[in-house]
Image (cartoon, rainbow, N blue to C red; front, side):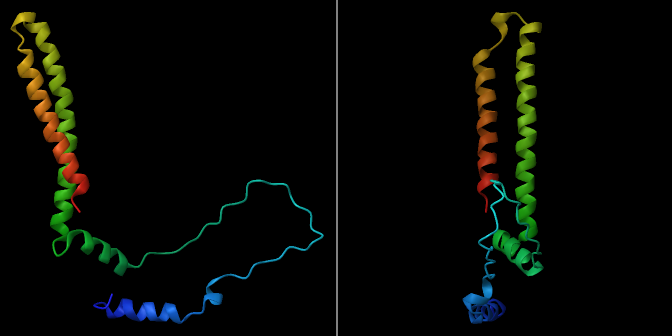
Length: 134
């Protein structure tokens, strides 16, 4: 925070506000008012906006100086993982169709199993890389 003068100034400004000013005064109910008996209260909805500086700070924290490249690789890895999932489903269908066109003895099961699991291993590796590449 020492390298960001804007954040330092904002922090000092926030520290200068007394704690009493930040809390809302509690409204007291009169003693003669009866309880309504409701167990569920209405949800309080807060509205606000996120400043662009904060969003820019988040993106540069994720990608450093190469934000575009980071998001391109991140989204690309998810696209490749999705494509590999679709390909693996097709691969299983193609494998099962081999039993319709070839005699059972001619279908090389170890080859089909090893090729399917190698594709699954690659798919898992890309999925893990895509979910932890920050």
